[in-house]
Length: 414
View (cartoon, rainbow, N blue to C red):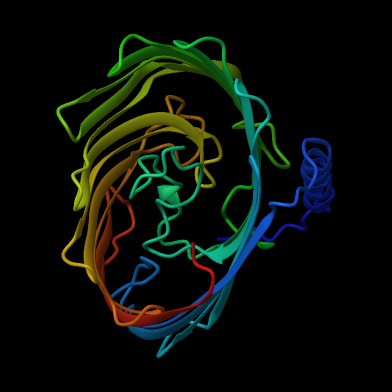
């Protein structure tokens, strides 16, 4: 039975205001305007029809539904010499033929990047996400890799499967890069995420902060090695049980071989100090990632795997999360392309029997998308996807989804 408790007044918005103010101040201090400033504005709209067997991975019968989804995404980009500022937002409205109520999802983000000197650069970002978590949304929350691949290798909060929760999150980050010499580079990163749910939700709310320091050295024109040390803190609201501090040192390596192949890897260990009902205890977990990509002129193929300790809203503490998968994109001709990906993830077990819901949980997902440009601004899309949970104590039907839609772009889409 759900426990409907009165929520304490949220300090979310004051924190967000402070973070936004800091971003604006940094923008004002770190660079003025110039005569070469350029502004690009655009709006991308789409209308999609979908047939899904279980769009929220719920348990029980009669979970299928047809839906219509309208999406509007405005964006503004300011370019001023070495400085770039981006503002993006997305509004998505979904109507279902049966069982499910209509939903409105809102996403917004702001980013700022600048090269302060030939040796020093930085970037900052803020994000807001207010959306209902569906069967295909479990892998898209959290920090994506800086290289921005076709598919995020980091697993999201897959333990939320079947809860159909509206999640509000505020995120932010700051990255600094310094080139000490032709071979030596340093970087410093910091970030936060605040996760909230409606009153009465069984999902756990938390605040998370993280930071890292890294060094890399170029060995030759094709290879580099390095070291990265990350520290994170997860604080669960209205309870000390589950609060955790994690330290993750890792060795890193990247290389290129052949004309189109590249590989990167990191290997290390994560040591977490977790607060349990009987006091604090330690947990060690292997951590790291592997990415192998082939990028010829017509497309890109990647294999990836990762393991890291992340906070979760189900289970009340951090969990080691492991993900393996592949992504593939190919341009068929000047107007058509195909994108495909598959991923299998596990939210690992907590080595503490006194922590509730500490069993492991698996999730698999795959999708295939065909897109064709019908005109300079009009594009058609066909999509098929599959998602299912495994090692799940609650029986659920898998979600099979077929979708078709049109998107139209206004303004400057560069």
